[in-house]
Image (cartoon, rainbow, N blue to C red):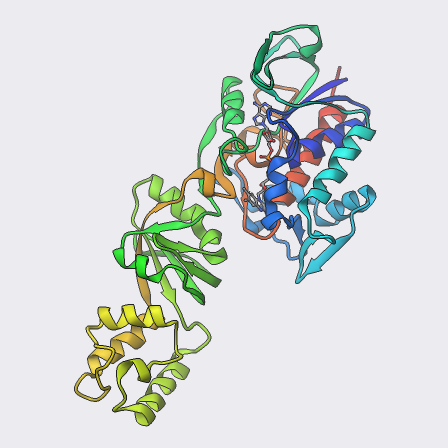
Length: 421
Ligand SMILES: Cc1cc2nc3c(=O)[nH]c(=O)nc-3n(C[C@H](O)[C@H](O)[C@H](O)COP(=O)(O)OP(=O)(O)OC[C@H]3O[C@@H](n4cnc5c(N)ncnc54)[C@H](O)[C@@H]3O)c2cc1C
């Protein structure tokens, strides 16, 4: 049983190992000069490869419901992932449920996968980009471009590029140029698959207001609410990072896929920021009241000192028309009350998300409506999909790699097991 795995990333290598374990003869095609380049970048080079806090609702898709996703994770979930890596020899570090290799080097995860592929006798063709994939009868034919330094050879269809089964695991357009690729979408589409237009996800958002330039560098633990066409969509909490163009940080990443999709549909996207999320409404009223009683008469900059980042306060003074040296009193109550209210509800208009090269993943991809529970195409038998190429994207926190391990395992195993040749 000859199996081709197109794409030597996290999902592709997992698929290759699963297929080999089931007795398939496996060839990985990888366009880069080495496999797993994106894996090396994950978790800031530390590789947050899964998470003990698990729910299907942490995975988003336009073409797959939670109930359907559950089937995949029932088949190969977090425990299976831990067993898989334990068998490969990985020592794991647990940081509040976020799991990393103990040495906190992504290269350890990649090397374990690479060595396992080599040991299993999996053939790996690097610098080999699949340009064309077609099926004739019950065989798949692959046409690939091999690059050797500056020399480019076109390897045309020939005997050894014929396969019984194919796993497409080409990843998405997200990530730095040269590492990410959209070619998997084209290969899938060439075989009749519907690709839900990918947009960047786990990505920074750009905002309309010019004052962001003066806020660059501010970091603050906040509660953020995403509104699409004035409707509340999602709340997130965590460290917000303000940049010269807008907003970044984990809480922004978590809802960025909804913002990116809405922006691509020309909808109105707003984010409301609460810079003091730890206080209830009542507590905050008490703080305001006490502060006024104790500190009235002080200049504004002294009155507000320590409540929030100085850069923020300077902006909010400006927006409330309050001079930093102005004494706080009854006469300017409206102005200082506005500063207090901006600290709890600061609305910003989102105009764009950063491009694919800044994104960690894509929302969209090959429709889950066109694959079975074993991730086999419903249109082309013997064609399987794995990884980010599919229309499933996870929250930040190790979930996207979990999807790569889950889908890679299912696709690789079933490419051999489910075969009738
Ligand atoms: C900066 C960054 C940090 C991240 N951090 C985390 C994290 O900490 N935790 C987490 O869970 N997720 C993280 N992710 C997301 C995670 O890396 C991806 O979801 C995951 O790597 C997807 O695996 P994949 O195998 O589907 O795709 P990829 O890893 O992208 O692999 C696809 C492979 O296919 C190859 N390829 C594409 N087209 C062809 C072709 N036509 N022929 C031959 N080869 C081809 C590509 O070169 C690539 O090597 C991060 C992503 C980025 C960009």
